[in-house]
Length: 375
Image 1: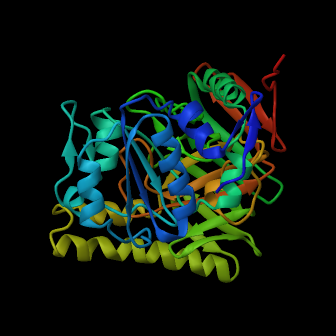
Image 2 (image 1 turned 30 degrees about the horizontal axis):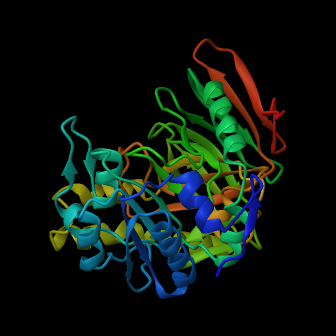
Image 3 (image 1 turned 60 degrees about the horizontal axis):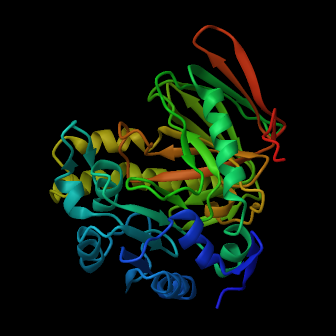
């Protein structure tokens, strides 16, 4: 069993906190939990906690899935049953949806989705959920029992600061110097409030993030924290430098880890053509997927005070005093790719320039400026 934590003067386990404070499960709701053998302890705790809350819960196991693997047909069928809440408690990834990749789901407003999970949550907004790629028992114990009201207040304040933003300039001691265009983009939250249909995010929660306008990022990223690769996450022993031109990575330098990143990207560039040939991608999509394998798909800011850089990206990207950039698919559904590789930058200084030409420094050397104060 996961250890108990004391939150709001009540002895509750991390699983109970997630069920009660994050997804706010109601009696009679249908809860689907998808796990792997490696995440069995956490999944079973969530199963027991949801049953204790009066939910109708189902727990399904599948083998580990990587960034390039499909979820099992049984798992995808379970998600298609449209539960009220879906937890993906994955050791690596949930797995792709080959049927939806070949024939994407479409909403009435024209949005397309290549996974049933995303379609039900973001498209139809009938499901809410949480996903935990790489979660460990230790991480759950340390990072799930936080003050979610304070986290949500921080996210709300940063949202206000990103209103009418035109571009964001990021520098860091490691050498990062990047400008991203965010005109017309909305700041998104992983604030731990997944209580309404259509809402969801990570456990541990704790970040805000935004998708740069495709083709409009310029400069240099020097990843000096940790990085996601197709075969897992790692703390970086040698920084990875990525030159970015017109929104795409054009050059990658560093040591063995830079070669590992390039190998992952190269595979993500080549594989779409095989999928298209096998009719697992719509005709003409392979070239788009290849291009976007080098896209800068996300700028995120870590906001979980209990998170640290451990070599597990699920936690690392939430750590205070860091930001992260993703290479590959974005969150605005206009840059599909087979990968979304997060990489952490330590101690960033982040300055927003607004549509009227004014500017505001929101992080300095990793420290939030004008932070929320709790009375």
